[in-house]
Image 1 (tube, rainbow, N blue to C red):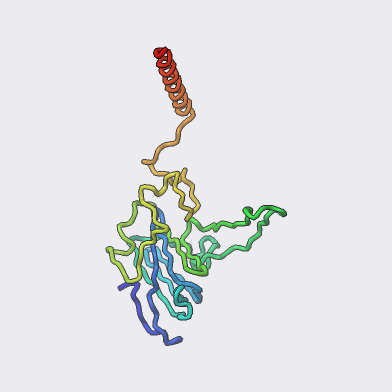
Image 2 (cartoon, rainbow, N blue to C red):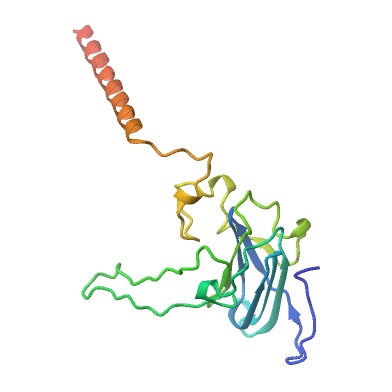
Length: 230
């Protein structure tokens, strides 16, 4: 099955193993996290028809001394937006290029002030090799309802897990109180039709006027009850 490839590597004479990975999704993207640390010699192949392939060397956190060769091949449920492997110059064959830090913290500032450069590839297909894992953002071909499954025809493979730390229910994806920070979010572009509409200035004035009337009505009733007890 796709994702369960075990073949001999003539260079290292080691088997190539399918790694453990987790996944979650949004209406416009799929989030893949490969649970390998210290990954090296990595490569990524991503195509518009939904094929995702990762190869590299690494180890699991509880088996640091057992460095092996890994390959993950997934035929996703639907197609992807994979037309620019350079991510507009921000990637090297889908691998995110970490920019050099150019900002500075004000001299004498407190420890809470830090220089943080957020990635500029939020809304592009890309992968980032971290110290403890590999994270990939795979943009769907179009924004649509959640896929019924990750893989084509609802298949499952060994080592595949739902990433509950990144999962977000479909009815909460895109609403303004979404606290997920996995992407730069411009809700005025992606806001769903069924979300609550923004309150206009006239509606705000009318609401505040109605609230004032209700408060006055309550005060009059409270005053009337006090007078009747005398």
